[in-house]
Length: 332
Ligand SMILES: [Mn+2]
Image (cartoon, rainbow, N blue to C red; front, top):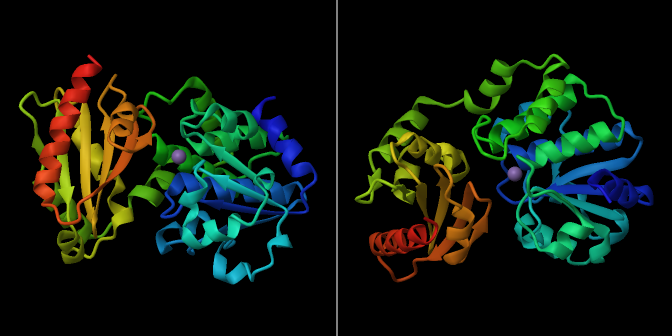
């Protein structure tokens, strides 16, 4: 069964649908849920986007009708309020946030549908709308909307376009295909403009953001061969420049311009945890590297979390880089 057929079969008997995404959502999670919700409404289906937290101010332009609501505003306790829950841009139910997870746990698993592009177990892929070859969840959502016979308009096209733009880091990843660009063409045909869409998501920074980025980039290190490079972000730097963690996601991409780069890493201190993001500079599968150190993700973009309680952050970083060097050798 293709994804659209699976989707149709699921929504057919649903009277009221909840759509949510992972915590600290990026534009792929947000754009996909908004796009899907608008499309369902166009089909006459009662749908609502409910996230654990409301949207950050910077994403409001993607949601002019305020479709996305924080869960406190919608969910009062009754589980029967929704008979289908669609989770976009993750297939780990725990990633929806603690309170949303507690809420979704009450549902029969058959009433939960993942629409996602992250690696997943075969059994999950079979039952859900999961395509791990898709460049973004936004791509899956866009193609399903078209297959359902719904016409794009500007309002619907912008969040989906932005979802794909952000998840491909502006169309640079190996997951970008002809299929991606054909969908992008249809989205642009509605009249949305590439520079406006680009600046909406990337062009709203303040001078303090530049100073934060500059400070972080001066922390760039690389191993001897130059194949692994990393930057480190600690809480005090973030506070000093009034930045938030979510706003630092794209910093790692700056490392990809380095000559000979195979693996770019960003270490972010978060309490007792060290968040490690990885990007591939070419053929290396950073998903494999992430899995070997307790995480997961795509071949070009992956992550893990390390415990740094009672440990020196610099020691953990050096040990991790050494491990990555070994893991890199295995892939050559
Ligand atoms: Mn995504």
